[in-house]
Length: 322
Image (cartoon, rainbow, N blue to C red; front, top):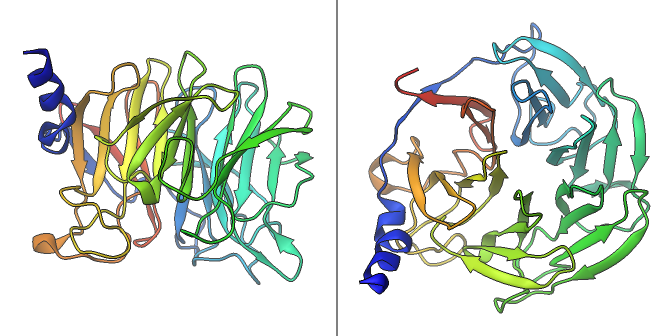
């Protein structure tokens, strides 16, 4: 009987949960004349409700653009603040730490610019730039003690595929991981999040799994019931939000038979999936460009935010009863 329960929780049932949410589009108000660009970076402020976004300057790159790519909205969609003009090529990952400071990864480089991880004050003052020769840094997460973790490597079987650990002062401490599919190996470690126990969840996207580690890199577990993870977020109650923007039944890139694209919501404690917000841009199972969110976050009220790359938008999902 116990074996049957595990199959139901982690097998087909993980991809057939109900959608208790309704979608709100166009809620975030940009300045006049500006449109959304590709957006994979979204996080919640330490106030629990306002939203930080890293946006690619109305396109899929900030190269040659003067727009502020880092935006701060209140829960009604009012723009509170923006900054970062001219500093990034490809804002990709974001993290708001326990002090309310904002971290951004730049996932591309050109002419000596990019491949950086930068820490800002909430007012936009640069507080730290990690002094390290990064190669496609995807995401950043800050441990409870202030240690900094960076996921690196955006291309399967090319470049690096690893997790880098730095002290809170920015000093390099250690790294782990390489290309592969064994425990502790990665193909596109795309997203990072900590649970309340301090365990590090890594969205190992091209391996169609989440890997869980302690902060020294010891492998603890892997979960495949959350699909092909582009974004991972864990809230204060250990509710786990994972967005799958790539799964397809067709062989080739994104191959994840039976995986359905969308946002899965469940428990970071036991891994049980309890809700699923489906990708609305897949007509009759056809494969569009990357559509629904690559980045995901949720506020203290359980309102979910999805940062979308292909469709260039930031959506808000609220409980249907709200």
